[in-house]
Length: 330
Image (cartoon, rainbow, N blue to C red; front, side):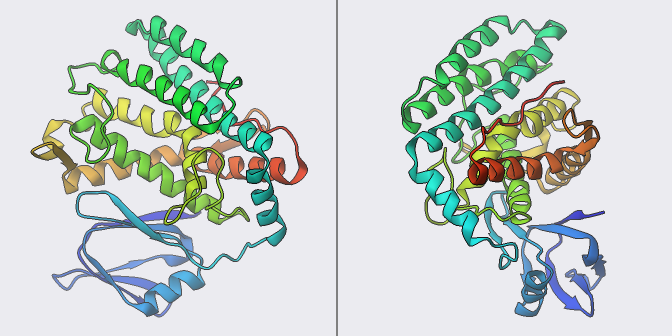
């Protein structure tokens, strides 16, 4: 079974025979079972040498790096082994075909909005009184397929998100500071959690895209650009309500994470190291959570749902079939 490794210790990571050996500043050693590694997340000041990086590339292990504050800084993306020139051509053709691009972009938002509504209805059935928000978002969802441009589509998505975030104060079981979404930098506990966990969803999506023949820089909702894997943003849009948002509600309502887990500087809020470890433990467990897949008729993990979404996208791009994004049914 594949595992994600989360490394917090400062020190040195090097190759030792057929393992990765982590040496801490105190001289202690920890060996990673690299044969089961899916990907590696690095937090803290870890030193790597080219021998180690070459071995990661040889074993096709993406490695994601975060700075001291927990902000994502980049990924070591090994040379792609599952390349397909034919699929790359099809991806670009779909991007240049305005109708197909809009169909894909709209469906990413439809999926995300559907999953947002599932969250709201879940809490509305638990006496949270979110019926007005649900009604307003349902109205906006009907407008998605009418959009003529990605810019217009993103405007609707922004309105849906604003209504959704405005309702969070009712979902939380206690009074929490959260008036609006602030990204750079996050200014309170909730914004910090959104930024950090959304990034985990983004990097997990990148790791799953790597297992397919998709090119992660060709996207349809988010503008393809330099220095980012924009297809991850497209696919993550669908899964953030299921993985990130539900996790935030659970962390706060169950007091797993509190205001004491954060440091604040002026308008800047960031997670303490121990809090990151608690969140990563929860995230790893959540990604291993399984549901009975209605189409496959077998248990499927949240992480594998990301891979399945990639396969659906490939089928749409290559075979020109209708793309139906993942939508929660529970």
